[in-house]
Length: 513
View 1 (tube, one colour):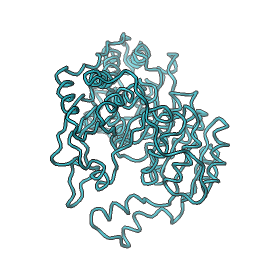
View 2: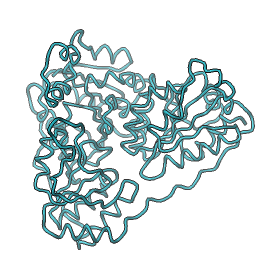
View 3: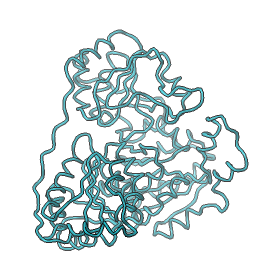
View 4: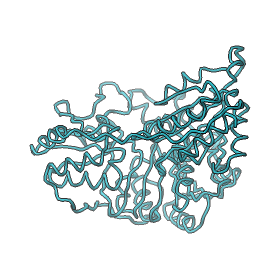
């Protein structure tokens, strides 16, 4: 067999059976191998940033990596923003990037690129295969790296001659190391701090936001009074009735400082210290009080759930504690769009066991708290700040969980980065309701301009405005095979959303706001 076939067989042996792809000439032997070897589901994305965003959503919901296939360095460059988001979410991903044949690179033809250098900016593991005999083993090593807890980005660069040359050897799966445990002394030290009675907050992310992780964290909160919070950007959270309600640390610096005011102990569980998304004149970068003490219960690569349970046991917490119920009650409201009213209405409409993929930007800031008492669901969100994640992540999530309804909440400006994902949803007949917040502006930038101390003017108006001409989301969706409709009121949205939930297949709702 040639190197390309050995790579496909090695990926399948390591349980990587889905490939999101946008191939080119250098990848043709890999594509031909996909024809010869059964078992790999191949999904076409019409842009590389769709491909990588799909792989991110797939990994978050399946817990395992997909492969991506991209064309040389420029193809990887096009996909980089959503690899960045995936890296921030600790999503496992195996990128296969084609390259010129090894003997062709010295001639510096147009697609020659420092692909390995670019890959290192977002990857935990990077390798360029040097021979067909090594390709299969390199593929197995890439999967091992991607599956290393809590999830890593692995990028394998495949020169064309290593793909087409004979001598390939399929490789067996490599063992994946278990997540290391937290030292008992760390647990005891943090327990002493929490017993002090001083105001404390646990900042949770990763597996700590799964249902078992949240239950373990609630055990700690139950006996100490510590407040549970998560970062502004969350990779995946189990939410809804019967699950522990945990709100985000606000994006806006002043609000975040207010929320953390008076906190003496900040306990990090897989998270970083609360930090402003951007720097602003005369405002701090770190958001906790200057006199607070930061404790690291567990680093991202450690076993977060076991660490929380060990802390709860050290504190003498009961094994089962009551789950607090949030104050907000779902109900369908009427009138024009307003963030809290929309979230309250959405909470009444979310289907049981659905997946919410959120890239709502300005319109998404108020979504979390009013949906605490919605039907049980999982929530995934843009994590690295590279907008355009919602559509493709929803697409990948639907591929990973075909028996669950996916709800995508997407800002209109951000949605234009990856609108091609709608075509993949239609092609694969995926069960996704896409809700586009159509404010016809990069509205968040108006607030950011003021936050840095500048004043709006003609130039900023030109750069933030999306209304000349207006984006027609109905035509955009229809042109890619997705049925769509437009609403302007909450009651209209509720009627259309209910109808969309009762049917299968992709659907888009443009909410004019």
